[in-house]
Image (tube, rainbow, N blue to C red; front, side):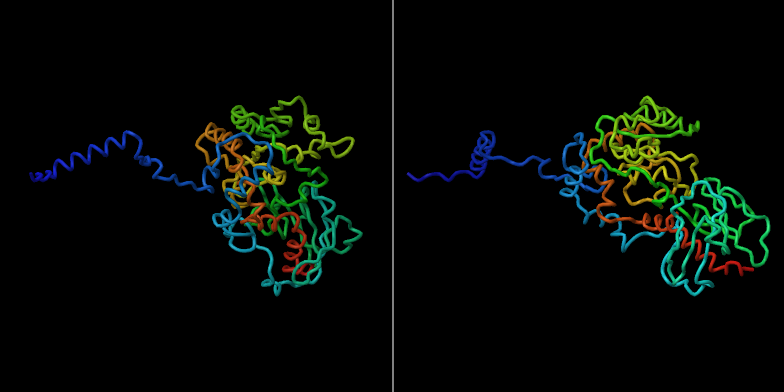
Length: 404
């Protein structure tokens, strides 16, 4: 007897039934939709980490994790290369260097006599070998500069009149409301629009201090703050923000540690001598904290003071409130600009999350480990450290005592 052909519909039903049985028995297994769609993680944006956030206290260990997950190559790709090549220019900083303007110099040697000053350090006094073959004497001694080419005044104003053959009058004002005296031939300030610029980034703004930097970061107390000039607006801002973050305040303003010199009780290794002042151990104490709150006295363009640069030098991450163009003066991805957040609560939340993320936190130190300075190289080049040569050049271009 011949077999009847099997209907195609019957075959389809039998195959479908077998497939269902195998699927529910676990013999066949398909990947889930979520496993097919891989998340896009950019370790140089908000998270900078592939690990679960966890508290950390060792900065060196955080660096190792950052190296393995991000690394300098990717950081340089994002932030403009090394200090030797790509860096965006900024009108906030005066250019200095090169030989293109050597022909404008009228003198081969210039002497500057500092007449009125408060904080200009004594160790700035020196004979400098500057570019274009120019030599520059900077001194506070009228014996060493008995016939100076220029007189520098910082606290007192220059003479009302300058007669032919007399030294040029130089006046310096690095305070926020910078004002010409009306009696100067050359004006120095922190702003690039003035005759000679002097930023606060130089090493000479903080001499004779303990620069010991701790690799151990305080895990329970996140923020360091020290202020002894209790301005109402700054105190109000600090009070609101610090109420949201665990902190130590060591200055006269909002002190919560029991005294001005309690940092030495917490960190005795920061003592510099038998009778240290609070500013002698400033950097060393800061280095034990993940963050340093830096609030300028006045918020105005280009007024970026030692408050910010102290924090950078100590190896902490500054939380900054001040100049709206602060990023023109600092290394890329090195500070937290508090004004960029919609609220203090949002800022505090970000700081807390960063404190628990070693890779993201280490990313704020990548600039110094990878040699990516950006405009910071120019900020340092326009600092007090280089002022003698730059001022001597300005005096030489005018002709010194022979200036009309």
